[in-house]
Length: 580
Image (cartoon, rainbow, N blue to C red; front, side, top):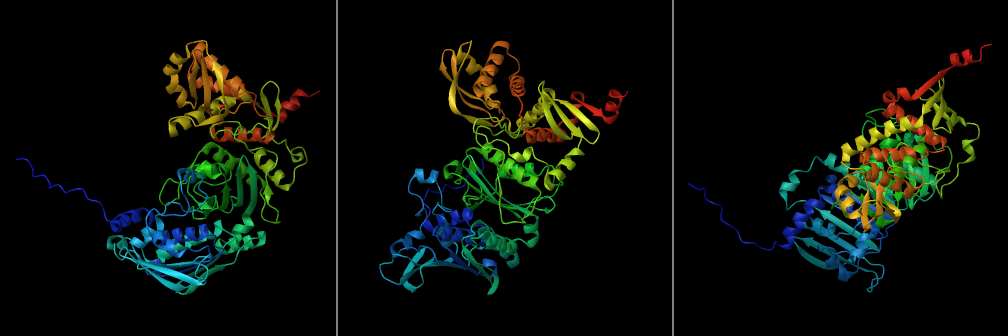
């Protein structure tokens, strides 16, 4: 006998209150989420002073007051309505988001799961000193006059009182308080130009004045992190390719067993991102023990159009339009900062020197060779490269001297690299060593993400084919895309090159792509092998730092495979050669 089917219910429009409560599940996870959203609103309102008071870990009461622009009386009901915001007007605004908030969901979501009161005094209030207060409960608004200085106060009482299932999932008061403290701390590290007072259960947690000078910023860092971090950190300031990286980075000696002291901000927004995490991990790979985590407070500023913050309702995740550029800029900036092995002994920031960071010279993570300083637009090497070692450089030199491949001395014209280690001199055959390393790195890249990362060429160019272009491209598009190429048919025997593998960091990209096309069209070898041949066929960097970075990569990834491609020359060998 057929089982009885459940009776069908008719389709109905959800009430506004229920829809807001459902939306609140995405935005408001716990009291800390409320604090985060309200603090972001205060920052967007231009506040320079924010006072935070919470009771019982935020479950009983959250009160946040700022001295920002305030909200006019006639806009207060809209402020608590879903999908109402002053921050965007069109799709173009969404693409160029410069504010912390933009969805128009936070206040409406908070109001739907709490008893909320918003009091505000707009700076251009037509009624003089009068402020207005709006209360929300069960979807009903009550607007009344109030007394309030310029700015806004939001008071949230009895969070999740009308959604008991959600309230049951809250942790102990102390746990919820710790989450709120972390949110406030991160906001204070993101905006040094904002004074913040934080109280819990009538007790002052911290009071942070505005920190505009470098000295005041260090004081705030000491208060929020600790003195040891300041002593172990180097202050950095790198800028190029439309990117600016600033902040503080502790050396490997000051590391943690967990990632609880990693603060990274993009245009003032605290984020978690795999590209950033990987770049930092790569920068520390030679100095940090497994299982340890670096400590840093870093700010990345970039064109808002180049980062998509409309990824998740909590706005913790972003997508970079040029992820490879971001990765490599961070990696080489942090790598150079760590090489200094210095602390904050002076007020001067560590500035970039000796390299140019731009979208055309950035290598891929999977490239064996870093920047080529001979590229157009690159900054020439500083005199420090040719001057005697300072103490930090000498320490780094001695450390590398004890490694298997040692320290690079010079590159010979016939594609050999001469190095020095603790046993004497060593000669490395560059082409074969790079080939083994690149093969391994590409294999790992394909295993992780199924295809190589691509990068757009600055100006698309055409390539001539000796065969029918539409037929050949249709037949081989899948293989080309897997390797990071994007080609389009221009004519019967021409294709346009739009994207190339990010790891293809060659001196003449058009010439190299033409050589690649000729190889795979005329000789039909393996597409991947042809790419490797093109990469190692290009002249390797003339920069000593790049040589040493290659040596470290080989030691970490392919030393056992290149034993036949380097030869050790010991002191005994020299003795025999010059023996009378």
